[in-house]
Image: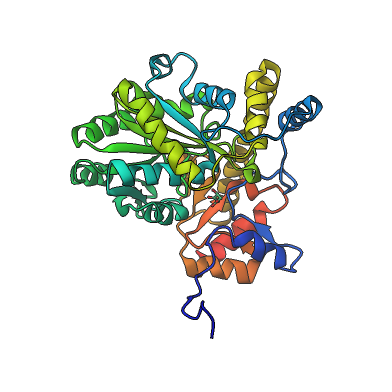
Length: 397
Ligand code: LMR
């Protein structure tokens, strides 16, 4: 007899279980295209030099370890908002904005989800497909989760018409989750003109946009990747944004992100901020120090910012090169097939269209690891493994 007699076993997480399975695999030629983390040309994790320098500055200052305020470090938030919106954005001048440090992008999503469920909406709509953690985060936040078409499996393109049609049918007052750039898992984003249409439609339908942005700088560049969010904010939407520094500053395990909420009434800022702080306080009390200190140290220093931007650009360029190289390798081996759709995908991922059986075959037969939805982490490719990956992909296609 146990008090836990009725405890069911849950399945492993489809993404975070992969590094563990990968580490346990004894095959020397194994290839990790799973978790969305950048890898160097020789397949290793990368800690940016700008991060190392920021850490050594922090260490030299011999700072104390007192608790941060509930909503996090003020200097970090100021810099982070300026990075997201650009220094001159009217929303920052207006001060009609609430922001709080969060435990990575996931923590920000959960906070935003709970805030919406408590005060604003009972339903959120997600793209089909979306990041596998979105649905459960929002369900645990207390929201009903619906979906809208996003990926057209026939053309491998964005199903923009289907998306718009679904938006027209969403009940007013619902929330809609949008990926600010580098859509996870498809790598497909609306064009800027399509974002403008979406903004008008979402406003007309009286929906609250909730942006998840985890890859700023991995698509086009830091400014262009934020243009959808900046545009929506300039159009007077009440909106929510969850931001992650896991990828663009490579701070994965440090868990650094933030939540920002933009109301249309300035007199509501204090009330909303009080609600966000309450959610944080009764969840994890206050956020962690170290990652926020690194981000603030980089963004406050023009030299470190410049160095970080160059490093980010280099990571992004390598991913772009690997995407091109994969397409080329596939084309050489299968001239009758069309892979041009992959050129339209941006960010860390390529959506291969493989089903879970094919993904499992790749794992068993070729020691290639990816999530069961067929998402490829392009950053896991390098000149040594790309031929082998192309061959294996074609063998199960
Ligand atoms: C991913 O999508 O692979 C990353 O965001 C890691 C995660 O937490 O799932």
